[in-house]
Amino acid sequence: MGERRGVLSAGTFCVDFNKSIARWPEEDTSNEVLAIERQGGGSGFNMALDLKRLDPSLPVEAMGVVGDDELGRFLADECDAHGVDRAALHALEGRATMSVDAFNVASNGRRTHFYHQGVAAEMTPENFDFSSTRTKILHLGLPGAHKAMDVPWRGDASGWVAVLRKARAVGLAANLELMTTRAERLAGLGRPCLPHLNWLIVNDYEIGALAGLETRRADGSTDPAAVARAIDATLALGAMQWAAAHFPEGAIAGGRDGARVVLGSVAVPQSAIVGANGAGDAFAAGMLYGLHEQWPILKCLELGHASAAASMRAMSTTEGVAKAAECLALAKQWGFRPLSL
Image 1 (cartoon, one colour):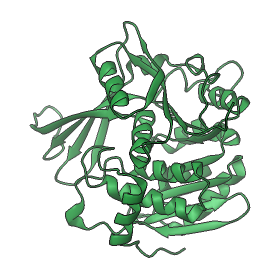
Image 2 (spheres, one colour; image 1 turned 90 degrees about the vertical axis):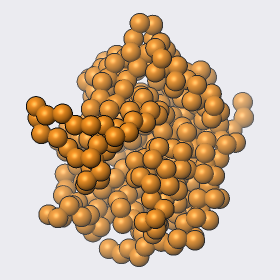
Image 3 (cartoon, helix red, strand yellow; image 1 turned 90 degrees about the horizontal axis):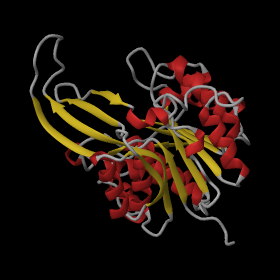
């Protein structure tokens, strides 16, 4: 068989209902929803579509579970429209697809999510069969959003660990996406996975939670030096070749060999920003694409930031992302912010 190529994007597939409201209401009051937008979501779906937008020729497969309902058919149609192989995205009879209500508050830019697991609560390691894939990398998520996967499984700390073991056994490299939740829960679910990963691409809060360190200042801003310390501490807990953490001002990558690369984010003009929803997923997709192509880590960070910047041109989590060359050209036009430790 030929050399492996492509990414298997697995785990969370859901439908997001993005709802815009003027302000967050008090309990026992009513509040008008100004606009509603339906789109595919979840770590598996977003990574798959972002990668196909960056490089339509890249083989991308989807793996996970959805319901045999209208929302599940919507996700299947979206995969088909973008060239994502969904043979391993199984629709379970009589089940409801996972859905998320995401409320975007116009007055302060904050976002609050309410999610219904539906069939996602029943997903187990048995839903992951890697015997026929010829992809090179497994992108897996989201610990914390799947009831059966989040608990011990046949001697492993969780279903996530069991899946990562299966992936390694067939030669897949692995990256894990995390769910931003309570630091204690994030650490409890994430740390047992670290020895089974090749890379880890997360945000500043998540790397701090894994490391048990505070990475944000009292005013909520990111402390880059603290992020760097958290990366070092997290590398010591796992087997990753690289761990990277992104935040609004930039990103830091740390290597197992002690290397450290710092790059500021793209200075997107305010007039070009439609929404930041999906920027983190786009960063991870850009960086993972670079890792797949075996680029130097600095170039991986550049495409990560460029993809995130491009994504901000649209309200959707994926529609703003373009081909890799176009994203990089956009980043060159707007420039990178200065960032140092």
